[in-house]
Image 1 (cartoon, rainbow, N blue to C red):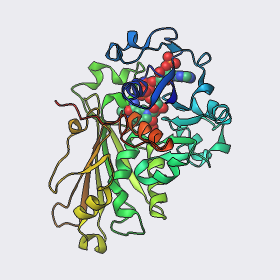
Image 2: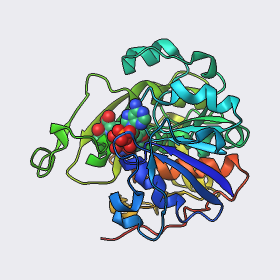
Image 3: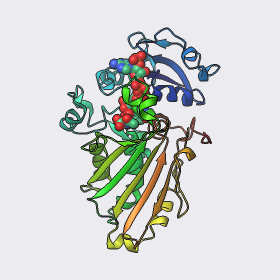
Image 4: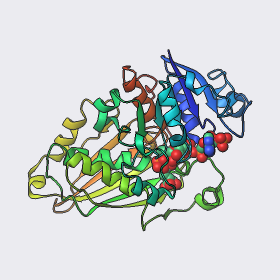
Length: 347
Ligand SMILES: NC(=O)C1=CN([C@@H]2O[C@H](COP(=O)(O)OP(=O)(O)OC[C@H]3O[C@@H](n4cnc5c(N)ncnc54)[C@H](OP(=O)(O)O)[C@@H]3O)[C@@H](O)[C@H]2O)C=CC1
Ligand SMILES: CC(=O)N[C@@H](CCC(=O)OP(=O)(O)O)C(=O)O
């Protein structure tokens, strides 16, 4: 059994990890931390876990994290980088759901996250947690910076078009118009996520620049082997879970001549968690709710020069905790689907 620790077990990604790991056949939960709820039984705080999770929250100081095989950080940015070195030195693998190990350039990190990086020596070693791109590297990694929620959807939507030297779309001027449910903002109290503020309402935010823009461009440029530039605009939608990304890209002459539907179907045929929908489909966020699946549809409206790619995912599952369990499975040589065989919840 893999001994697992979770730092930040009271947040939305933390409790989602608990839900998934409680059903995982190869996992033993050793420690779950909370500074505010230390001592309280997990199932007392989250009755949905009664009968599934028996342990209590510990304070981060008291949790015996160095006795774990792997520790997930479901914490705000900046927490994992303060503890990663000690855990790695103790032989513990680290999976950070925050952004501490996503951006390779510490100057970019400081610019977007308004804090200096305290662990730059580990940035080169850290592997980006997006299995469809980095599966082999993840299998051999001991430190993972999980892909962000929006970046997962946008990169999956563009991957088949730009990898392997393909020049099927113009790689500047791409537009990613993305919408997220409110759980994307976390469980902490904030005016913007109050019911009266976020329900019956719809708005864009961070239009001038969102911290996921450099992450998306870093990832796409690495996949393409040349700079890829895009405009990313996130929106907050009055739903709890889910991300819907609409991506617009201009096809090159080679792209116009290609069978893009088949390209996507072939590229993701062996991927357990990416579903390419039949031509003409419009995937809905609720078709992936609670599951680790991303569903993708491609369209060529009008004269066919513009490609419109639709991607839906559950921000808390494929966009965060589910994908991190997928990554853990890879790191420990387990079947990728273990603990993730969940059918989405309707309605
Ligand atoms: N929500 C989402 O859809 C996604 C979130 N993420 C990332 O995952 C991380 C967690 O997100 P989310 O679950 O939404 O956040 P929440 O705000 O819901 O939860 C944060 C958790 O971290 C704990 N925590 C806060 N500060 C510290 C600290 N200094 N040391 C130790 N523990 C701390 C909190 O518990 P306590 O204060 O009791 O210790 C709480 O359990 C974030 O970095 C977020 O960016 C990534 C992808 C998607
Ligand atoms: C709706 C909402 O507020 N979403 C968050 C993104 C989700 C998140 O927590 O960011 P990471 O994926 O980088 O960890 C935001 O825009 O800041």
